[in-house]
Length: 157
Image (cartoon, rainbow, N blue to C red; front, side):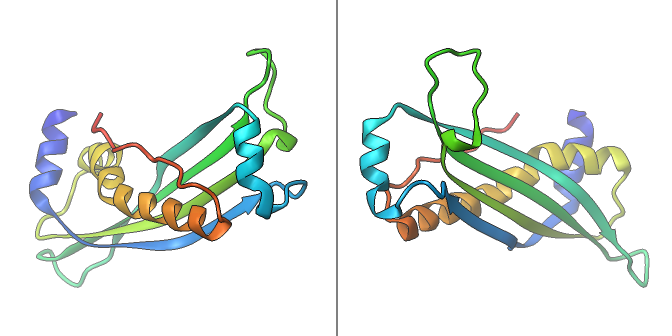
């Protein structure tokens, strides 16, 4: 896997990271004006998800130029902590959530193998999209009028 990753890293050049879809929502039972009060009165924790969901090789006219687009889905939600750790989180326990999908666009002078695409998907795509995700979360929190949610620095696997 490491060999395929190193090979893909040498071949690919990042062109752009763009947001394809993004939204945030607050529990309909909560008035946004009072969200900070609710957050301070309850024990909460963030739950997150991230994954590269698709990798597309775009067709080229020749064998000298190749283009790849990776879709990266990511979300975070802030939930009330349950008394019992065995209890499932209900929708009513979600205070707010933030979701986004990004496209990371790369070019290469060489065609990538399937193994290189998989290795690159698991490591570098998330790394490249992460700063855009952090900015989106900060902006969403600001628009909701709540304290910024701290998205940790991305660590390579």
